[in-house]
Length: 66
Image (cartoon, rainbow, N blue to C red):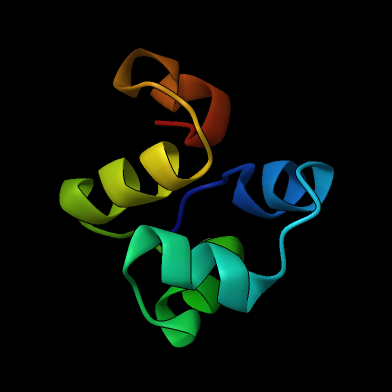
């Protein structure tokens, strides 16, 4: 199931490249690419991206639309 998210928008606002965010989050650049393209991912992956962007778990709705 695909979902709309703001990962790319927030990543670019923080002036991070895809590879930088992927490295900070501990995920592959390909995984990040898929997520930015709207593909769904596991909750653990969402948590890694949130923390890498300096967001809290409570701010997950800022990044991912359910």
